[in-house]
Length: 119
Ligand SMILES: [Zn+2]
Ligand SMILES: [Zn+2]
Image 1 (cartoon, rainbow, N blue to C red):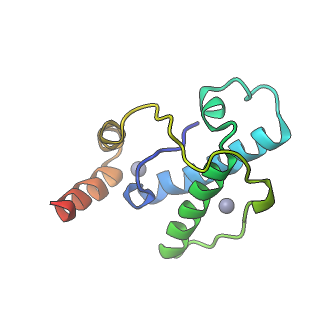
Image 2 (image 1 turned 180 degrees about the vertical axis):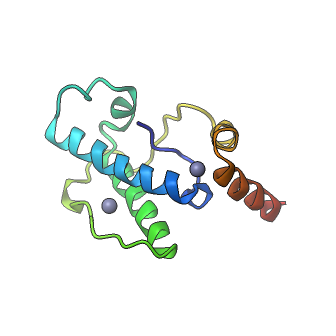
Image 3 (image 1 turned 90 degrees about the vertical axis):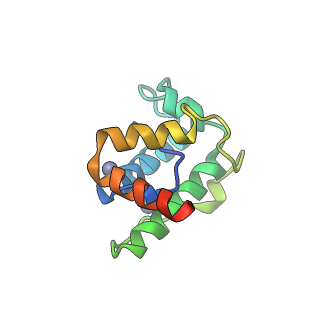
């Protein structure tokens, strides 16, 4: 279970859709106080930052729509409390880009192209 901190544009479809599902899962775990997952490090990282999670989900959803996927699962904004910025990164952004590139050729291609644009 992991929400990446890189720009969702850099995620391949599979990672983008997976992350979107995880955002929903984390949201309900934190809102409903579900045990079991409550001690997972990724849950701990987002607790108290539901506004940040809300915004990440919105960014994922916009990116999905841009790629032609339907999105019909809005989060309830009135529940988006707490910090609006995720300031606790498991790995620095460049390390996350490296990990994704290493694990997945589709993400690697997106990351490589965006680095070319940034140059
Ligand atoms: Zn959604
Ligand atoms: Zn990927």
